[in-house]
Length: 382
Image 1: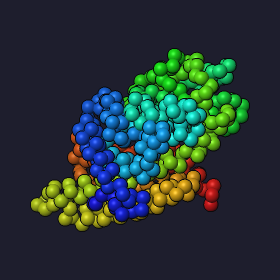
Image 2 (image 1 turned 120 degrees about the vertical axis):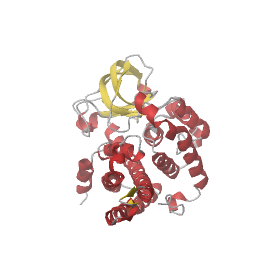
Image 3 (image 1 turned 180 degrees about the horizontal axis):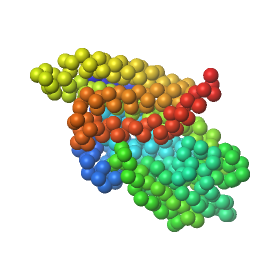
Image 4 (image 1 turned 45 degrees about the vertical axis):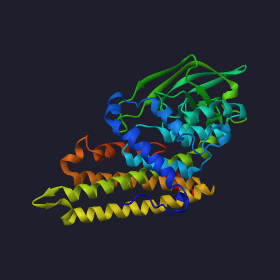
């Protein structure tokens, strides 16, 4: 299959940037997947190398050290990362999520303190929402932040935190008023060199094995009150709801790119691999399965491009983002599973990229809000 269409409205004038992103991903990410999977994290220097070539804080204004681009630049990077087969670099969380929480809600002083370091790779960002006993039910988190003069004292734990092993700054969801439900949730930027912060184990996952997903613990962590995101306490839940559509669109971008890459690889494999004296591609079942998969990818691409264009115009709503996330992640799981079947036994071998892709994409139906939560969100607007 061809690369994503270069003449789509959101991809105009990005050919040079796509070349840069593709070169970086193929050179700095693709060759190291096995080693990173064994150590459960990528090399820290990847972040500084990415900062040096201009791949970090892409859509953050230049006044804060960012690239001054748009979500289109972010989408190109995430597509090329997915096409390279990388499942280790948590750049979408750093670039597309954490940096934008800071840009939207941090004070001017904190933006100038943190965002240039995000752009250079000096700081790696993570977002701490999920807790051991709380998944998608964010209004019932238990991590507490109690105001003490000019500081917040934080106690609690988070789990499944992408970039948790290397993060220098965590945007942390906390309860500042435990009796106020969603209105009691706040977000606080917590530097990980603060006394009382500690990392737990790097989690042993089925897929995305090279990504540093960690448990985080906060024991009387004292953070300046100025690190509160927003003008007052209790705005965290609304802030998360405002930012989650972009997070879900990012997941959709990687899902579609992964789908396209899987179909392309499977077409190539079935044309080269022979069974019963002829290429596997020549069997009717193979051709029909690939016809279905290519159609799924093409339809998903068209819907995704439409959603990206809406997002660039500020028109993508919560429902639209939930639809994009639901549809693309459900489809990529089906398509890649069918592709594994066409690889036969080799599709189950971890040295084959299709096997790693199969394991990696399974989480897409869970993180960023489960498929069931997406259906709930969509149904509220019907």
